[in-house]
Image 1: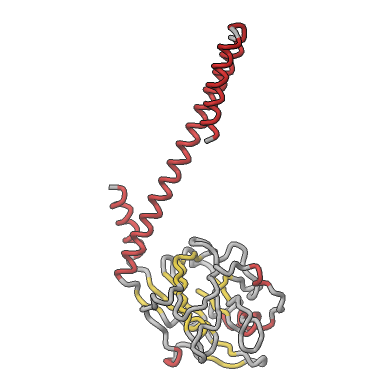
Image 2: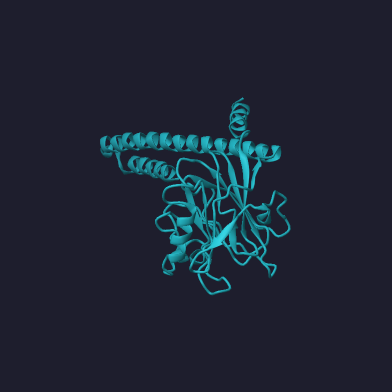
Length: 287
């Protein structure tokens, strides 16, 4: 009954979710589109696509901030370095109140520069007016120092559920499990761009690449969420049982100690037997 109720609640919450695709790398070595609009519950999927040489070019997705576009955000998400074509890294949006900024943390592009400082950055829900905007974020990234800030990011990425305002939901890099979802077409007006003085391409804001979440994806999310709820409930129950058991054995140990103290005069043999019982009890408690 609990599982059916939880499944219904989760399914109702994700039925309006959207699946938004952002390609990573490709012929230009950038995120396409650079900025997407997403609401709570939407899934933003980063699809690592091959470059002109036919490989992914070793890209990643690391959460940063508008103030420091090429420095990992504390507590933020990070994908593994992608080595296979069409690997994908999915985020689920948990808070759409503030923009989510990110950058590529790789340092091996063809020009020998850090990818972030080459302009490979992006955002979710970046404003189009005021400050910061997507354009100002790209400009700040290009001007950022080459200080090795991404060196401490785990090459295997951060765990499921990590991230600020967006959490890691899924990661797959198996070459025999190709991606079959939608791919945004950058030649179809998805990402108009211009060039700044540094020679790097600065893309204007775009929200293309948005697709409705499929029924299969909804079912997968619902089932996964129910399993997570059940696992969490079991974990809480287990902790409560262990705490109760520890409290009870602690009281038992105190009562046994009191008995031993009163019966010291009954002889060494009796005391030794009771001490053995106490030792066995304390061993069980430590387990």
